[in-house]
Length: 405
Figure (cartoon, rainbow, N blue to C red):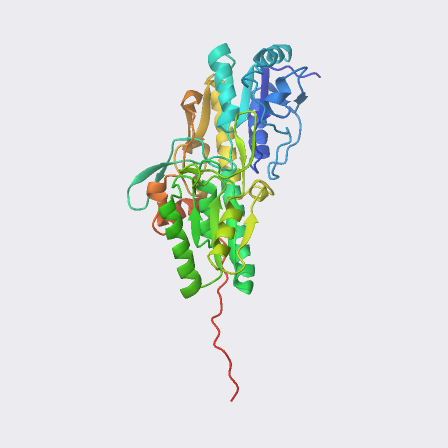
């Protein structure tokens, strides 16, 4: 017998992929289906609503939420792109496919489009957070053990990416120890240092984040500290650096990002990259032997979802059920406060207006030690919520030379 539906919910994923996308899709699809909605997938983000549209029916599609990536594909498509406005096509396809509600899974760019459709055209949208950079303003509070509180952020996708960076950093230590070598690990983080800072739990000795610009004076202090550690403490050193760190530019007299390409994406962002190699070259000039650059690249995005991330995506996905029932459109579900694994449930969620969406930088005043170029115990406490058992770091043996009798 043909099933009758009360309406149609369409889900899309936009921007860079994360390991939490499929679990988010799976949970949202399941709750919408339980409410007797047909569930459609908009393929490749907002691109799937352009032209003739690319829509798939996932109402009864089995989805493995443990696997990374997105079964719905993704793109950085912006229908509001200046000079190429294609919003009329989006509106036409929403009507053509009978879409009643859109759930937009993405960062501030993808959900910014959803917010404009809601504000300008009254399209019922629900935003859903996703980013490995963790730079969405989710208004999630972190209550510190000392009794203070700090506004943090927690987005599905970040816990797994942080875990991957922690393990990558710890793995690099073994080869650094073998060759008495410095590794500069370049990590994604255009405007926020959340992800690069997670390398601390993997044993990174120094960390550079976008929130603290590397002025001419700070650069010299940084190299002095690296030199001192190399000469007097240990010469296997790992430096975790954000691709978006602001570095002193002698020509412009300002602190700028290092760009791999000036070509802009649909939302006006250039491609960053190269700061790790620049730091390694400077270390060679300083006379430090054999520095190497390792680019984390897409490793943080890849693989299987972590248990904590699975719980976060599930809790937020379950909140979507309540939002649909109460027609709470133009909003996004988020975690209310940082919680240990067993407390990541739907009752620990809340909703915020998409209109309040914005970037949330790494709170360097609480989580970062500017003088030592590393993170504070407060950030380690934050990470320990989602990575309760970090890898055991290898210990270097300090040998004494054996001399013949």
